[in-house]
View 1 (cartoon, rainbow, N blue to C red):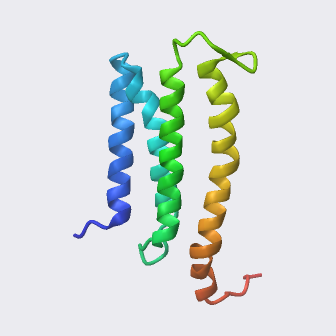
View 2 (tube, rainbow, N blue to C red):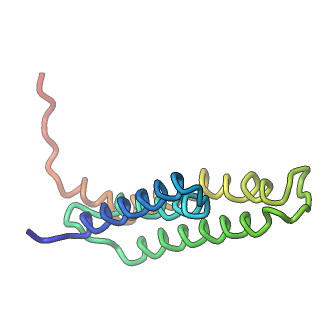
Length: 135
């Protein structure tokens, strides 16, 4: 039995989820908090594997860069947690989530994955033979 990339990614997702669960039960929130961008990145990497269990280096670099930006923004929000400042009428940490993390996660993330699909994954569909729909 060989362990391929999918198995490694599933194992990494299991490790991140287990760490988050332990953090929840031990009331150590940073582990839970930082597991979110890690899991997002792992799921995107898992989704970017083609049917031959391969990655396209530019697509993988884009996904990893997106994940690093998310971790950085989560770190900024964490650092600003007890800041006391106000941005756009919100506490600084909340403002980072509303004005930066939320748009990055909901707009940039899908655009990154659409780019990955367009440049890499759609070729898997083009290589397959179309089957007639049974009636």
